Image 1 (cartoon, rainbow, N blue to C red):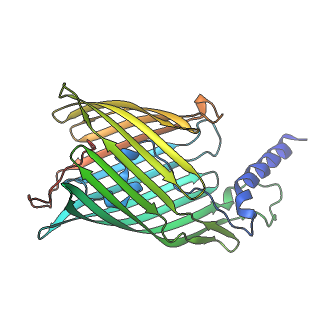
Image 2: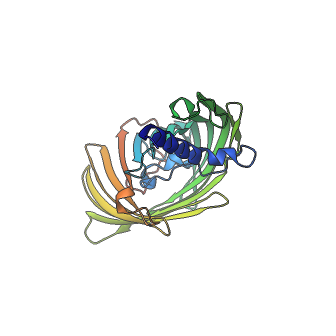
Image 3: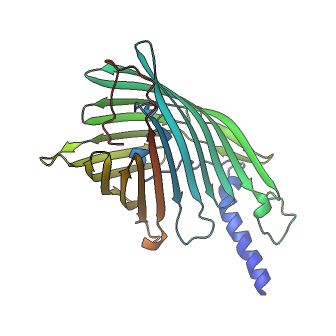
Length: 322
């Protein structure tokens, strides 16, 4: 077998593996669509619209996650979002916008979202209710598929995509040193037609997150345990995190780890200087892929002093040290 023939054979196997789920069960696909960021506590609007407007400042967040280092076509996920709070009379509101692009091999999953949240006092804390309008776009880069038989009807020979409207919702409660939130993504569970042949069935994703700030005698040090639970009706994932934060004035350093049973372990380190927060994480897969095939992730956050709220009883401050 020549080198060219072997390469064509490899390409066919590679593309067939990626498209297998699309070609079975009358061209329908049911799979996890939403990425799981290691810095979930810093990217809460990504999975819960009720977190929009939680700060009195304009919050800008960006993240990039590189999947399965060392594997060709493993892809990566890019996220960018911004949210802010504003006051109407004596009521507090929040708005936000999100763009997300998740890519693996020939497949891409894009999401454009607009968020709204309403905040009010409850049981000595602050409750917020959030809604989100999503536009989802699924695509296959058929033009990049290097196949031995260019007329193979199983695989698209050109780039194809499809889109659909979707919605998400959430609740978020903050009380002094702790918080808890629940959210549901993909309320409409849309079925997206990609081109004329392939379908992508989006599953609802339920999530729960909570955290607590543990104050020590040393006022500069805080311990922050938190958790993130995800369930899509088939798979369950639990992230259990512990952070140690050293803060003084507007400067902060932190480090910590996350354990995800039967999935991975993550180490991270970061800090904030002059309002800019940057953090790096490495997620080590414990399911057999090896230490060297983990996910790299970096996040960048900025808080712009743009206060459109009136000082009053509805004012609140996030307890997550963002």
